[in-house]
Length: 277
Image (cartoon, rainbow, N blue to C red; front, top):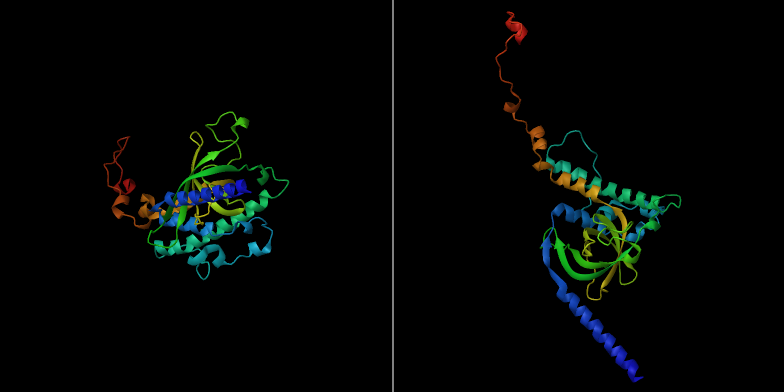
């Protein structure tokens, strides 16, 4: 009985020490560009079980408020051939892009659940990461909306893979939307910002979770790569800085003026001026 109480006290001390170490590892907030932050913040609020059974009509009929979050417009605007300003264009396109991403993700998970699909989701392998540091990030550090950037060491059974410096097949990679499984069963969405297989380092962005009782180990499993979606988002964000875009929207007439050049006939014929114009 005495040995039992000693073991229990030892476990309690270990638990308290672990919680304290996590509180020390949370660093001050850093900023992320606002558009990328809004994109991640929105999709990280989605419940993962919405996509576990994509054929469920309750998921396919989610309201705009549930899909787009707090910044949801009253309705989706139709695209136009002409916009009064870049702001009008943004306000039309951003909700449409998020709505399209939601239903694209729904379709992708539905296709992966098809037993006849060669890219069955059962092929995806998970990796384990041991948390080293946690930092808050936001589009505006004064805002209450925050995400977590988690840096961790990853582990994998390299006995079955010959080159540990290269990623094993079907494992989470940089640019992947992943399931983050923590404390055994709890599951949220996350995004892999960076993956260094040589040094076994991984940087992950995910929603805010309670770190006071967070188990040190996280399990990551790929949902899909979203690098192409992020490229579209960044292209839209950087549109006003595009030289081509500005040349089209605000053309300089002098750039299109052709100077009159000396025109000489190769055959030295005397041509009328009208034929030279």
